[in-house]
Image 1 (cartoon, helix red, strand yellow):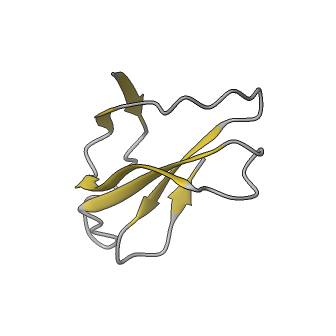
Image 2: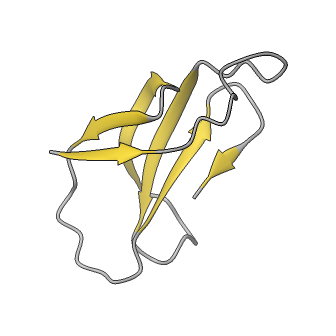
Length: 73
């Protein structure tokens, strides 16, 4: 298990009010994100995930809003 952490930056509060996020993993520098690490989790700044066996120096993690308009890498 690993912990993914992100800065919520008040996106869980109005006017953005995003309560749920999706966390995905890229192995190609962010061109695609085929690995879903968390499908629907609280936008609380931290999530325990299982890291898939991906061998690359180009990995990127994306935290994206569910039913909203932002994401962070």
